[in-house]
Image (cartoon, rainbow, N blue to C red; front, top):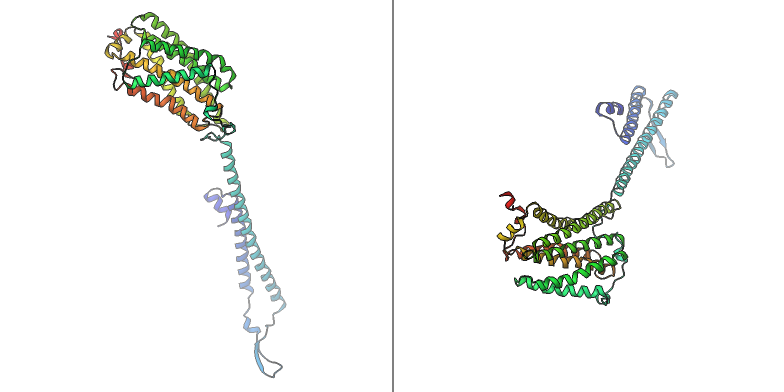
Length: 386
C-alpha cells in the first residue's frame, strides 16, 4: 500500500512522515523491479565455468575455478543490476537522512513554538524579584530619624497600644480618658499624614490617603460608641460622617489596587500573595457599612443588640482602638521599607499577617470572655420587624 493510499484511507499523514513513506515506497518499487529482472535474465553459473589446472613457480599444480565466459548481453544486464543495487542503497540512505532531518526540524519547530507560547503568557512574580526591591540600600532601625512630629506621634501610638493590649488581656473596659488620649494622638496623625503623603510615589499615595480615611472612620466610631448613651443623636451623626469618608476611601483604594493587580499580571509582575491580603481586608471592611445599614434600616436595632449583649459597646471600642493602631502600623512598615529597614517580601508578609489576620484573631478571641457579639448581631432584627 502506498503512502498516498494510507493518507486517503486513514486521514492526512503529517508532512515528515508522508515524505519518508513516499521515498521508502519508491525504494521498494525499485527493489521489486530489480528482483524481477534478475530472475528472468539469470543463467546457471556452472554451465560457463570449468576447472583448470594452474602451475605455480614451484611446479605444484593447483585447481581453480575459472571465471565463466559471459556473453555481452548478459554483461550489460549484470552492470545494470549493479547500478540498480547501488541506486537502491543510495535511495534508502537518502530516505533515512531526509526523514530524520525533517522529523528533527518538525520537533525543533514544535519546541520553539511551545517556548514562544510560554514567553507570550504573563509570568507570576512569586517572591517579588521584578519589583526592584533589591536596589534599596539597607539601613538599621536606629538610623531612622524619629526627631520630628511623625516620630513623636509614632512613639506615642506604640506606647498607647501597649497599654491597650494590657487592658484587653486583663479584661478591663475602656475609659473616657483613654478615648480622649486616643483622639489626641490619632487626629493629628491623620492630619500630618494627609499633609505629607503628596511627597510619596503614586501607588503609595493611594494607600496613605485611604488609610487616613479608614483611621478617621475608626476614630469617629470610637467616639460614637463611647457617648451613645449620653448623646445618641450626635453619636449617630458622627458615625454617619465617618461612614461617608470610609466609603469613599474604600472605593478609591480597592479600585486602584485591583486594577493594579491586573496591570502587574499583564506586565509579568503579578504577586499572588497580595490577593489573600486584599480579600481579607475587603471582608473586614465590608462589616462597617453592613453595621451602619442596619442602624439606618431600624432605629431600634442597635439598642436591641446592646440589650442582648451588654458588653457590645466595650468590644466595639476595643476593635476601633486596634484598628487605629494597625492602620498606622501598616503605613509605618511602608516607610521603613522605603528607607531600607526590613524590606522586600518579609515586609509585605509582616504587613498582611501583622495588620490584618493577627488583629482579627485578637478581636474574635476577646468575645470569648466578653458578653459581646462578633458576627451574630448582623443576623438579628430590631423592633421594626417584630
